Image (cartoon, rainbow, N blue to C red; front, side, top):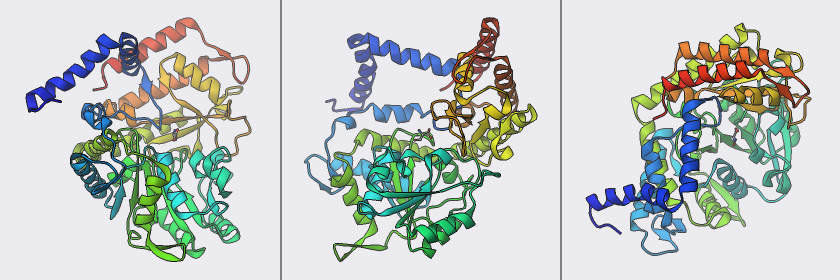
Length: 448
Ligand code: DSN
């Protein structure tokens, strides 16, 4: 291992060289993915681009350290450096989210949820959450996830006409179900979530409240969306969606000192969360990811990051407005966050989510098909597509580019020749011409 700064730099330069010389196949695939990103318009609401500094921390020697436990309470020796790394990440997470407690160890957003849920609930306890088909998430209670398998899950729904959360009906459902845990936060909801109302509902039925803000956590850091941290007992997020490394966080605000009864003894909730993390759900934390989270969280404290979060919302609003003007059926007619939900099936006779996603991808525009609330199509087909603006905004695209992108989407969806719910054809000259327009646009806004 190098012993001074010059050697340390050389050590990292050698990493890329080693990959190229030792495994050209993987090196070439990574290079190919880089080109794909540069030459296509990424509109995935659940994706972002982290900085080279975050990538450097991910690719560092910290990946090799085994350090089960928490700082100053590890099962392994040689942890003095990684203890400092983890303490730094915790301090920055607390600063970024204005939280009183932060746990930076979850390997993902799903594991952050798993840690909280298993810290609070016994098998068979009741959870009330937004169903996956309504815009929720697998880890909020889907029957195919651990939540649905081990807990008794009931769902609340968005309003059938407005597609908005209806807090009165959620409250009614909570009173009826009496859950031990209510989960709020969504993977497909484009309007502001009222976390204060959710807490009021949770208090009314004496339930814990978990706010999973994975999709909007960057906006929350910048105050471009209200924060749940002091309303929810627990706030969780994945760290890649707001622009950091893969991983998760658990945050606590006003309730961090609250106690829970475990085997008839009072225990601090945050202590219970730590035991649920290790040894409850995970083994050794990924120290390279924790270092990368620290680097990312420092970035979130800059004016540049904060301004970008507001621009993400501005771009999403513009894109949604233009799509509405062009005659597409945008759910709720717009957005308050980074996300736009389009009912493709309502926009053009015969179109489905999957044919929309695939035909757009053929032309270099990357989106997700999405099961919309009350969607009657199967989940492999769907009626909708979900768009998001974090990456195009990171590339410094703005209003003019949102107008260009909406026109390209509209033209592509009009050009598709529908064969069936899952099959379509698209004119080759149209495809080549659109791909070129996309590539030209992207070349003016490279990913750094
Ligand atoms: N994969 C994310 C999404 O698509 O929203 C959720 O984890």
